[in-house]
Image 1 (cartoon, helix red, strand yellow):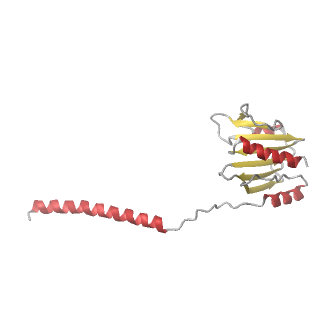
Image 2: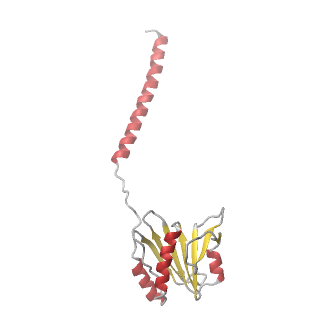
Image 3: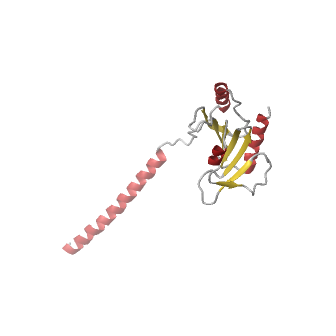
Length: 185
């Protein structure tokens, strides 16, 4: 074998070894991906928002809302804040729908115009809304702004209920109806 042909053979062998090494690495990665178990379950567990609302109601002396949810909806978080820095105590609940849409409900006590203005920052009145519930002020996210797509605010005797989220207007309307029913009790 000549020196020139031996060099060519070694050069080919290096390329061949590189390709075989690459195939072996890809096969190993594929095997690891297929073998390692993955937990695809929802890591956010439902919370008993009605029990949390009852506890917040007894602690605050306020009527805390715990509306009935449509089929397939569940609560993923609750929070009662009695002494915030702006002196507007509030109750928050996050609701998740069957298609991962969500609505956050905030019930605030002794609100003021500044609180409402800060809540509706980056929103404009929603003049496109065709759904009823005229007692609710409907807001849409201003073009080019960041924040929740939809905002509905119901003001009652110095208190307010706000709904924000990614759900459809019909879903907002369904939750608004249950809130109005509960408030009328």
